Amino acid sequence: MVEGSNGWIVAVNLVIWTGIFAYVLFLDRKVRALEDGSSDGESAD
Image (cartoon, rainbow, N blue to C red):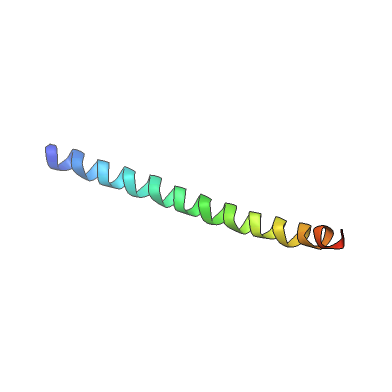
């Protein structure tokens, strides 16, 4: 029973960390897209 619960802990951790990693990559792409779009307006000043 202890081995089974350890397996669940590992599985849940993998799902959580994979989700966090994917979310950070998504935010990185979104921020880069915003920076590329706003840099044109800032350089005009």
